[in-house]
Image (tube, rainbow, N blue to C red; front, side):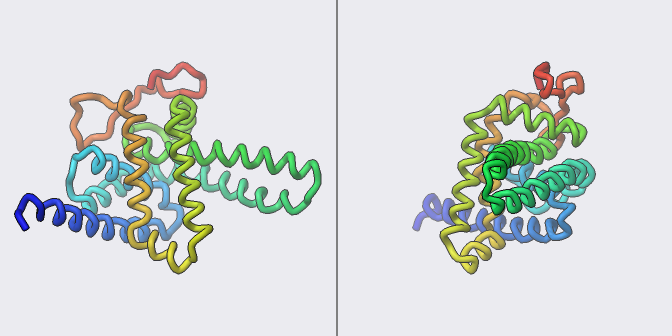
Amino acid sequence: MSNGKLNPVIDFINTLCNFFVLNIIFVMTCIPVFTIGCALSSLYYVMGKETKGEYGYLVRTYVREFKRNFKNGTLAFLPLFITGIMLLFNLLFWPIKETPLSAGITGLLIALSIIWLAIFHYTFPLVGRFVNTPTRSIKNAWGLALRNLKSTLILLLLDGCIACFFLFLSLSTTLPAFLSVGFVLVAYAQSFILNKVFLPYEKKGADMQDKQSILKKHADMMQGISQF
């Protein structure tokens, strides 16, 4: 086999091995639970670079970004985690009532859960890529979700595919898949979509190692005045 044919195979195997190691480190850094936010922020940063073709040392970059994102990632994660737990509890509680009132509340909770999920999808890539306060990152995530409905819908459809993966396959199949390489592959696929969303807001010509700044006066998308 010629080198021209061999190199892509070697590159694929090398990338897969790097993804495997990165996935294991990601899972390990998520174990304390409160670190999930900074772990996700760092993973999306690394995958954003990878999908842009800005190849580098995945694990080394992840560790560096994990340290950098620790405070903001954690502070952004905690309110989303608390509200997520509250939504989950109510989604488990109200349907069993089987009354017209509970049916209406369940519908409202489902709608709120979709909104929560959309915000969750954008928050941690924002924390990883842009310098901002955790509160404004969450607000900007909601603004991005509204302004990019097509991309948001695709991200939610990917969630549906993952849910089907867990529903229709046994735990003995799904758990090893995600513990080995699944989380990184999902972030990799999502990053292609997120790159297009973030492209208009990223400074051109900035140092690739630096996260971009969002001007404070342009940050509040909830009021509809943001130019991000």
